[in-house]
Image (cartoon, rainbow, N blue to C red; front, side, top):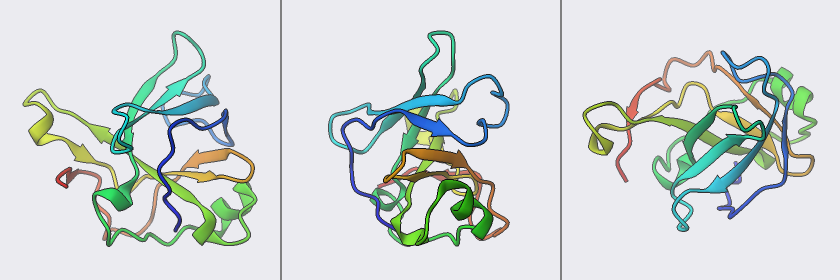
Length: 134
């Protein structure tokens, strides 16, 4: 899958809301560090959620989940390899050294249409909390 670093993406329209945030479907993805290692997935609503995210290929070069056909159809992807993937990051109270990435539920983006969704993969090979070490 193509995981080109981006400085800022246009408006992302979530075809399904991020679980737990049903009222928020419009987001932007902006770099959080200027180096393309960390991003913010930010709701356009001032009171909406903001998630720390990574392009997983930068941290986990072996990460290549099989996207469900239904997700590809919802996003208008004719080739799953065209998708851009981002994984949400959790930074626990112990601090950034204990941060983990959710590889089980990536945000999948069609860069041709900027439609996106978070998908929960059925493949248990991808953990919900993988230590974030580069």
